[in-house]
Image 1 (cartoon, rainbow, N blue to C red):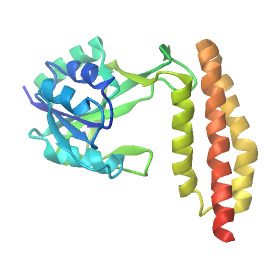
Image 2: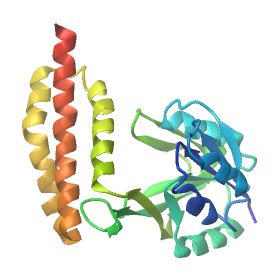
Image 3: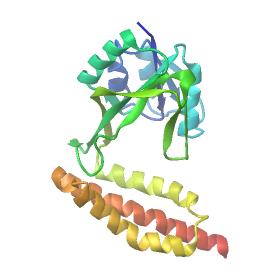
Length: 254
């Protein structure tokens, strides 16, 4: 049976981290937490649960996760976010895979997102497939400031696992709006090299199309009122992203 190193990056995750780590019991042979100097009880909770905690300044999601992989004692990596939990079905699947897994194979799984206490099945939020299990010599994290992704060796075969990765993503509307405001600022900075014409075009049309795509084509209406709120805030995020980029660009040009 192979041994797995579970890796988690954290910053002020005291509300989530215990459920995450406890779901790894019987699956992970060690749990490594890379903490960006949390000011809450995250570190003490992790240590009490037997995790190996390393504190390190945040250098970007991909960089933090690659550093976590480098600290792993075992060759097989299971990457988790602090607000994620392995479902019972996914745990059973992973127990079986530990008996037969070998190099050259990575595993994807569906992520089921919980928004304001409701599991979201539409609006493009499910199945939200993620590759989270691989041999550490065969993949590393890459991507931009917001969206990291796993880059695997071309020869690696990806197998999809049964069971969901449960993601407790947004607890209230205020949290979602604050998150959108933060992330749109980061994205706007990346868009400053685009032309004013391009940014104005996107500002005028993207919010509308984002709403229509999520609420109608991705059937967000089937998630009820919460589906409507997700679609509206997603459209708002497009407006903020391009609006901020235009303002930043105009300020730079002055």
